[in-house]
Image (cartoon, rainbow, N blue to C red; front, side, top):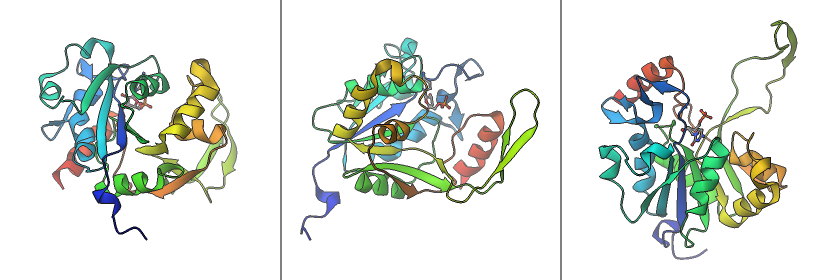
Length: 235
Ligand code: C5P
């Protein structure tokens, strides 16, 4: 085994934050700017990465209107290590725009939703370790019973066995070569429907492994998610 531990190696991880969603606005501002217990959600989402010693650079994909005029709380943390780019019409296009802005020295890439403000340091650590060799996707096992439902009528068609089913979260991690090759293979038109990058790498034939994650790493989407987030932020 190498006498040099991973935590002492050179920073070589690039983090892409997908924060360009503008459809679901809460109170006139993008939901990723809304405060949770006094701290904007995007700031909560990026801080654990900014503090990790392996992280070399962070690129945030924002709604285009905010790239040249970011909120003040974001401007104060922008430095040589943190870049802002304009996102695209879909999440996948936003991630690709951020990937194109990434420094050459980043050989591992992590992609995180700005709408997940409670990622743990342990999850980041395990995703980085796993992503040096394969794709890594933090997941939690499905605990609800799943129904396939006919669109329109609401009729239950099937109860889907939940054994072996996991819910995918972020940050997802990949060797940079793998991610770039997968994007190249499917092209800009082929990626628009993707909801995560693991699906892209799976479709390109690469191995993607599950990293067991915490149920606390929720994606904030609905008003009730914001209520849960306020409680989680107090703990
Ligand atoms: O829409 P969804 O909940 O899947 O969004 C997940 C993340 O992707 C959010 O953090 C959102 O800001 C981001 N996103 C993006 N560009 C888009 C749409 C969504 O960066 N065009």
